[in-house]
Image (cartoon, rainbow, N blue to C red; front, side):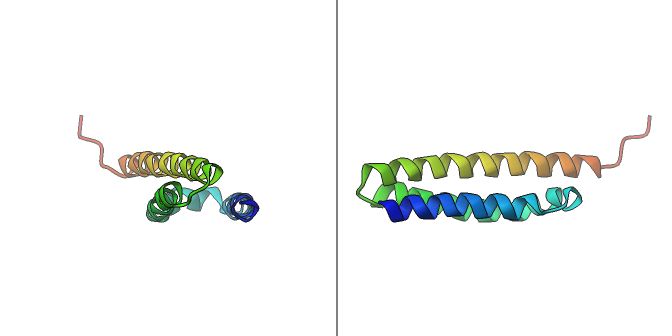
Length: 92
């Protein structure tokens, strides 16, 4: 149990450190790539929430699933807004 919490906290810390070092100009193009990674995270969270027997592990899996889902939806929203910026405006 303590091992799972330790891995969860370390993953949060490392993820924050990695993402904080990405320049803002690269953030939007990298969002579409991170959507695929978040999809893999969602699968891992589903497995964690469903297969591990402890109650705390299931709650951590559910929290990870919610966070990954928010990340995927936000990534698609940002990518959609970025693609809208590059569309040609109709002639008026």
